[in-house]
Image (cartoon, rainbow, N blue to C red):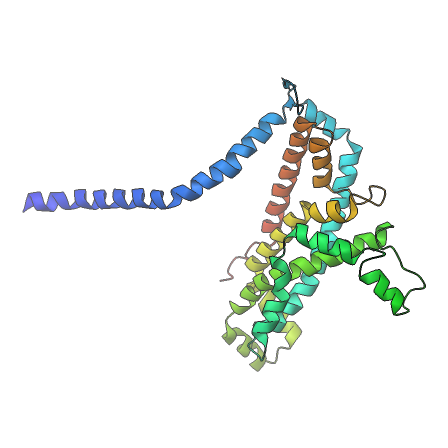
Length: 305
């Protein structure tokens, strides 16, 4: 009897150990994927950033010289300044469109599924494909917008929307909102649907209006959802490249040069791979810092379940 009792803890420990190994086996593919496609490339990029690494020829270790050169790179800081400006504007525009759409499609009503599909459809188009499409739409001669405005008598002549900064910039904003708002709408819709209906009904009984319910119930209970949507929007905007490269090529007069565009230029046009790697590490540090700040600002208040 004593032997049987003593062997029970041993069997329990053996079973727990087996479950741990099985759990490790399940997560092993994910660990391998992250290691091969993120950890190793990140380590290689950090190592390259410490070298003078031309496309051809031998590379030489130069320590932190690339990072010192970044401090004097006015073109990079101007590109980063424009990237932040673009990020603020496009994030506000995306949420201004996505939030009303999410509220509109959250409740079941006739044709709701059709609306959801139609609003989300642009999100399945790749950014490069969407940029090529809008590059044609914005073409002054063979496109749609400028010739249509001229034919309808809205303009005295065909206007090249990509010739000056303001029309070009707002054209890019319109394209990105069209492309991304549907995806953000789905994220916000899931947050809205997770709010208990009892709270809304109790607030209505207490006499709270739509704005009061939105401020006191909807926004506080959607903090995590908003944090996710905001981080995805900000990160994607800071890493913007396709639309500015395909549609504008950094123009007009390099006024729409983004940080990633400048990294691409230094790495694959000037072939300064080590310097491009250092720029990438700086941008990564900025992204991590911004994400942490957003998570802190949108953290869940104490006592809110």
